[in-house]
Length: 227
Image (cartoon, rainbow, N blue to C red; front, top):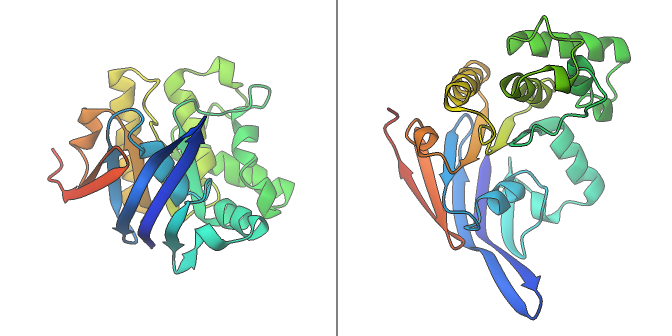
């Protein structure tokens, strides 16, 4: 699935150069679940952006099924993201003027899915996350946990190979966090997804079958026994 080799990311900050990632080597197999944990500013989100093709490394390669995302042109890279990778973010990133169903449909527009089929697939995706009765609700009419379920449905409606989640429970209380993680883990198992999640939450890290820790741009990976 993924093979990262020598991935370095440097940013210019005024006159200084900051190394967000320092020569990262990482393999993620098909169907793997990997949790990435570490302090703020340690490089977690930068690494996730590399996996999602949202940013390019300064040096190194990011292979997804043998294709180097770092070397793809923007048109092809956009297509890979649209077809193969689902994203979930801490802030939900829902469009406030669209209903839950319409928000989910937005993931299918770049794929050229017919409007009628989009509506059907969006409804089925929302049903799969327990929101089959909330299709016409606006984000403002939903709780935080429900909004994140809409975001999960949007990420999965296109049936991606990869699900990338950046602090997906960061805006949720403890009980809702556990509900969302149980939902995500169930979807991961049922759909055979490759699932990578960035979190600062130790309770989530303890659940992971595989845990990576990143500090000052350096990655350490260890197998873990989920609790």
